[in-house]
Amino acid sequence: MRRRDLSRITIAGVALALLTGVAPAAASGPGHDRGDEGDRGKGHHRPAYKSVGYFTQWGVYGRDFQVKDLDTSGAAAKLTHINYAFGNVSAEGKCFTGNVPGQADAWADYARPLDAAGSVDGVADTDTQPLAGNFNQLRELKAKHPGLKVMISLGGWSWSTHFSDAVRTAASRKALVSSCIDLYIKGNLPKDGARGGDGAAAGLFDGIDVDWEWPGSAANEGTVFRPEDKKNFTALISEFRTQLDAHARSEAKAGKDAKGKDKGHGHGHHKPKPKHYDLSAYVPANPKAIDAGFDVKRLMKDFDFVNIQGYDYHVSSEKKTAQQSALYARNDFSVDRTVRDWVRRGAPKHKIVMGMPTYGQGWTGVSGGGTGMGQPATGPAPATWAAGYEDYKVLKKLAASGEYTVHRDVKNGHAWLFDGTTLWTYDDPQVLRTKAAYVRDKGLGGAMFWSLDGDTENGELITAVDRGLNRR
Image 1 (cartoon, rainbow, N blue to C red):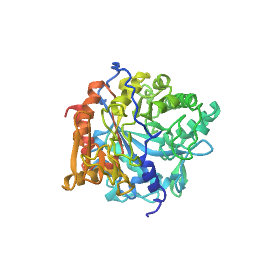
Image 2: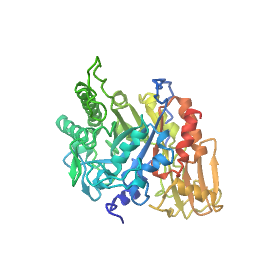
Image 3: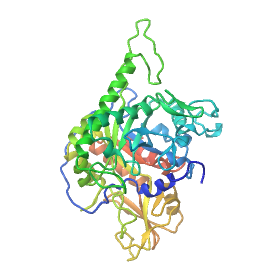
């Protein structure tokens, strides 16, 4: 493995079952649909829909998926937000980074030099610049695509371990939030040779995405959870909103622009309006997990939006094949049911962003014939990075190979591949166009993609959703 690869490939494997939350079991409970119109973002240069993509820290290694690829694929021009996955929280309850195998990768984040060919702006990194790596490339990407926001995503399946401990008191919540703002929003990075230092990443991150999986519910092995997580999570998000707003006001008062540069107030200029830092979260589909950890009405007052789980409804460790991301499903998890569960609990529709997968869940040893769906299987299907998990760009090639048959449930909005033995359930452009139409029809806030490195070189999935949402 390459330098700093280490156990992040394991995280990309085990955890990239990633966002299962509590393992889903079929259940009913349709909820009630209600129409929240909300702000559709009609202001000048403001997109009507959010298009949020997760960029994985470890994808620059095995997959060799670089920030520059977001530019060359055309994806960056179609995204409103890039969520950088992930930032970690220490046992001491603080946001941190460094070079700690399985815990942090400052090398990938801001120390790794990129040559001219690998850089968004076509200029090689020098040995003396304080910011290199993914962070510097994201900064260059923002410069090339004005209006594109970058958010730091905290936690994830593997790094939610210490959230519960870190948020038990008002003082500990305040300390955690302060540390995250200092590290990412103020950009005060630890020194790593010539890299890092105070303000090294200032102006890069436009907000914080909280991926605590899951408050109040059992999740990854070793992740602490408690009944009081629900009220503590609500208080944590309130603390994030309070401190982000306070920081924005202090910046405006000091006359700083988003990059920390003095804008000046001479010649009748007014002080700049405080920057709005976005605050979001990745949230579960399982109603039990929602009720155990999320005071929806209160949370949604502080969140700008939430990215709902729209995949991993069934995973390859289960004994039977099943859909992982259907738009509709009878007596089972589905995107529609998840949306309705969140709306029924008080989430405004325009703040709900639909999660869409750029990968598939797969089973092998499938018996019972037919289309393979709903049949017994012997285990997860062999795959490139982790058994049972394959990128869309690979599944597209399988679909074109002639060895697999593409099956569709048009009514319920999902697709799968089956060769008689191995089955992959996944979303292709046709499925995503249907989901984009659903987002429009229901007045939702937009689409989110896990993760950007699973798409094709020309950003086929993101393009399909972009055209569907914006009728291009």
